[in-house]
Picture 1 (cartoon, one colour):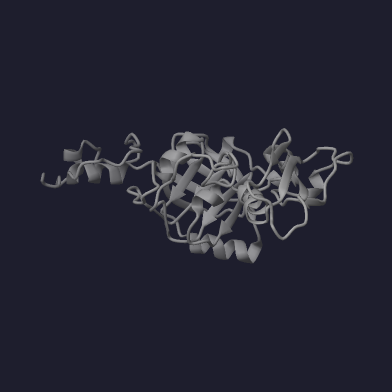
Picture 2 (cartoon, one colour):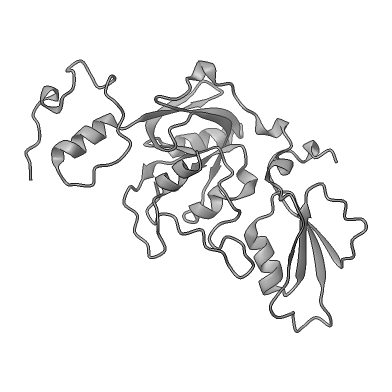
Length: 284
């Protein structure tokens, strides 16, 4: 094992500080102390800036891209792949309060028997950014095929770690959800990135499927006297809702876009899904 350098000069840095150092996004795979120390001090910086003037400094993971959105929080201890793909978080920057995130990585994109992504609530990540306290660079799980950071980067979603998520959660609990920005070193600066209120847009139209889909159970519900047909309007429906209706309740489910005219359809029950944003924006 190599010895730890005893001065910044031996690390190749200016003794004035590390501000001019080129960011290093990839944690070194070897166990050399010099490489690890160099990476620790050259990690890409990131700032969470809130509309009330608060700013929290941390480190970037995922995509090196500044974004703006509505800052909200989630207190779940597990299931971050499901939360990140939940259409209800569209346009939002999600603060995950559980301290360690990424420790079991991200599973594959395999499909289930209904041809839906088996491990996710939709076909992609819908939120704008992720805020966590401690990020795990080395996940361990039998289903893991990639890190959380790699998955976020592949879909252009930034993340920040190394911030006190408890402070942010307390602030949101007291003041309600608020607008904010994730400002990543080397990307768009704060004065060039406007605040973005997603509730001023029709988010249901952004996340809804574009065409009708029909899902049928392998075995109809034996307690029902006939095949029951439910029409579900997709305003941001989660895959697990479809799976439950079809696989658990044995219903035939037709899922239609948010603005679909279903008045001429034949069905036994109507299901209006939840979804993101302000429902009054759905004018049609």
